[in-house]
Image (cartoon, helix red, strand yellow):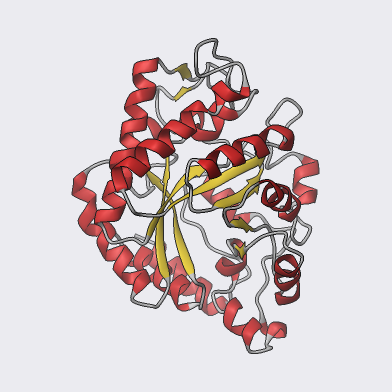
Length: 336
């Protein structure tokens, strides 16, 4: 694990946030990785380095979570797998067999146990962004005719079985869930169905639902690009989910001012605020808001998507809004 990664999460933890969720750790590098460089939790060999990461975050006073993912049809592998053989970006994944589905469920459970052993405070399952857990739920990407396809009850079976297996593996250990409420695609998952899934996940015992909208196939649609420029552009999704469940709900999506964050909480639209790119652009955001220094905040520019473009290309990300000195230092550390 690189010192750059540790320094990044140390900085995130120093910001004053309550919880740092380390994104996108791979439960199956051979079949489910989203990039060549993503964190791995698919073998016991990685527990020691993950423990250093957890210790780094917790040492700054924040709680530490690790997010588990299988990219499914978006995996950058030669033979991607998915609920059904629905083409994406010119590549057609292979439909999973029932035996393979069970194997993935067990890999999620084993990975979650490693997260607990590494000393994190909780584990989060990545059911957002159109990755494997949400691919089973979506009527667009799940065309199966067995017990895992067809009706919504069948389509939500896989993520519910993953939650059950994970909870059985980790025992008394919080299990959060990154939740896709809307794909923002004409034939994709809609709120009408996703709130039912949210209720099922809450009943299954998830610690919270971190609500989001969009997938890799919709993020760059003109109407979605325009939507994502608006402050709090995913709050309506979280509010709809919150009305349907009793577990805590997290919302994010360009909540870049203290007044907007306070308004979301005061109106009961969500229970917690996710900062994501807001914190990436300015790790001092929480302190500046608390101290009445909002004019000093470095904001994520609505018309800029440089960091996402870098991630999509498998390159290390940076924020072009950073001060020149920080950009220079970051680029220097990224250069081999």
